[in-house]
Length: 68
Picture (cartoon, rainbow, N blue to C red):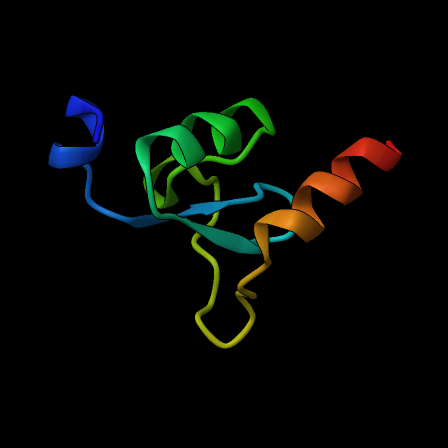
């Protein structure tokens, strides 16, 4: 296990325009999500309402990004 993963705490990362989020379970996933344009909740212009936020799978997000 990489040193980053030992200290890493899973957390949601948000798509800024929609408020949809994915959980970054590892440091590697965190870096991938960052490259895809996802941000931390405190970086959002507007906090998503919990009932409107949507958990998106990693595979769906990558496939969606590849279509653009």
